[in-house]
Length: 289
Image (cartoon, rainbow, N blue to C red; front, side, top):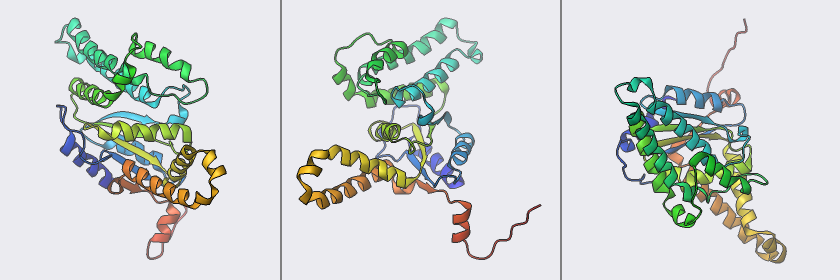
């Protein structure tokens, strides 16, 4: 546990800055994966790290399976950040500032969110009937009025996200944000959205550290299921002679995909008590009082 906290602190030293620095050199170097079987204590471990890591601002623990709404998970993260910035901008501790100055600070943050609106409108939601909800969510949260040039805005979404987190760090006076995802491997539809969010956007954030828990075997099945689905049933039905070749390709895609999102140096393994007993040398005695 202390080793993971030290790695997070090291990550802060190399990337944490109030200025908008360069994106991480290695893909997902700011993403840490906590692997363990069911009941190994991953959630407890994650809560402890989020609470006890110094010099960071925790965005909390997000369990996508407990979110009843169907909007993209990125909206949930931005909602947490927006709430935090709004409270800080209007905090009584900033009494030296006039109310108008406080409002201007928060309004600038909202302007940055609005700039992302075009790109955010391209993100798909999870669940049946969710497509019709995108526009209303954006109107409520980001007050999106323009519907043109969405595709153009999508190309710059990554940079705009970095700018939003940079300015939020200035307001909150922190260099690094810490965000945890728990149990995303138990719902493959939600889980895939989070993995793609990490791959496309959050793995390049210079002042955001991500902690993800789960069972690597379940993530393996999640990735393989998606890649087999991408190949489609037509190939499986009309090109059976090359099924072994396709399986080898899926093996390679799965391995590379998970390595890209969860680099080996950033993986932490939690063992159950039984596993620890099997791995340990010597004899253990337990006393029940």
